[in-house]
Length: 495
Ligand code: N01
Image 1 (cartoon, protein in one colour):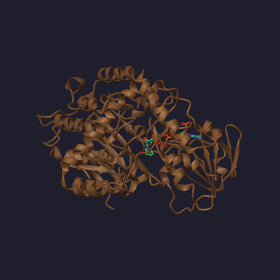
Image 2 (image 1 turned 135 degrees about the vertical axis):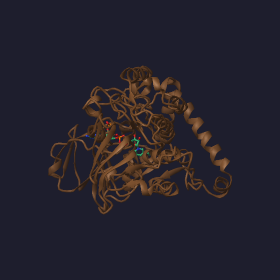
Image 3 (image 1 turned 135 degrees about the horizontal axis):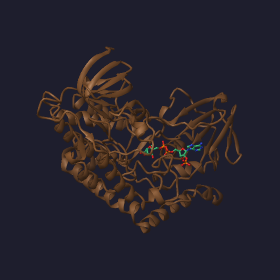
Image 4 (image 1 turned 60 degrees about the vertical axis):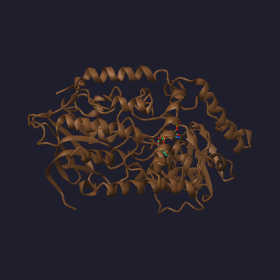
């Protein structure tokens, strides 16, 4: 594989998941052809490439979980499995001719703004390059988080994280511990329960689980989607509208949350007949505070005789014995950590050094903050896709990504990157978010978040950082975000 030897690109995009591929397509549409996509792995797909655990699927409807500019009329089910979403992203890569731009097996080790040259110096595992603009599209769910459990190094069996599933390891007949009960665990547990000899689930906090209204899309419906593009667009619009309405429940309508809780408890009662087990599985916080999970198979799997639930976190490991916080013990052959990701402490933030000589991680010591989810002050010509406060509790992240692509398009127009580049007299050489604009934007968001279920629902979640600040969730509708990111407002930037 050829090394990068000081080449210069107009734009360097980091990552080739939904965000990075979307950015690449958008740059091309803006007339920029001189861009590279730096991908740490050997294939595209981001989190949908890495998360290949048994049962991995999306809980956002298929037709809403695709780019509006690349609809897929052939989704086989109302909710798509990981394999189909990954194949879709491969298809997007080829359809839009992105492959020649992608540098595979090229992990970014450091990214530094050169204030003299007005460009980014990028050090990768395949060599160095420079770029007028850098777009960080590494995503919030890309660095697996494994808790620091005392004695884990003494465990003689197999250990892996849900996002690094070892498909060569045969779980059949094994005693397996699953740590965590988030969206990943809820899909893993019912998928492996029939194979394993014994499954011990370490549940620190029970999740709220709603029925998953999933079915195959076939027959006339499939035909209609293939032959009448408007049918797909209509379905998308309806799905989007329903989700926009749901935002009200999470942000200000406790009555609707109460109704959702009733449905979830009915779902639990229907599947679990043992009252003691039901008590263990009943959440003690408001629905929506953590991500609401959709599953018809999770509760039935937990009611099976080969499953034990330990109702507390994993505290220590000693050889093959796992000890929970409440003192319960389990002997196991394998441990699956379904313990989530480094969301508010991403590796790329530690590797990115801005105009002041400090890293993004240092600047974000008091909490992540970026103008319109994209621009941090002191990091010129730099944009994060799915940056601070752009995550959703209930809808499709692709809608948010596409809004950020509009913002990116206007950003590169302002820089005039498709012409001879910064300094040619027409575009701006560098755009840096004004600290006052970032502060004002963030203060408004935090004020809105104060009253939402994510902040007041009585739970701890990955939406909150270590200090309890909500620096991940967007508190409005996706339509509102679309409006907020339509244009780069020059008054919010220093040139
Ligand atoms: O991770 P999580 P995830 N002992 O951070 C527990 C997306 N996603 O990979 O709740 C015991 O949600 C922790 O416990 P607690 C989606 O956005 C989507 O499951 O902190 N447990 C929690 O239960 C999702 O939100 C889909 O008390 C320990 C779990 O680990 C995001 O990815 C599918 C522990 C971590 O849950 C992340 O989901 C999958 C310990 N010592 C993922 N330490 C779909 O679309 C941590 N935990 C369906």
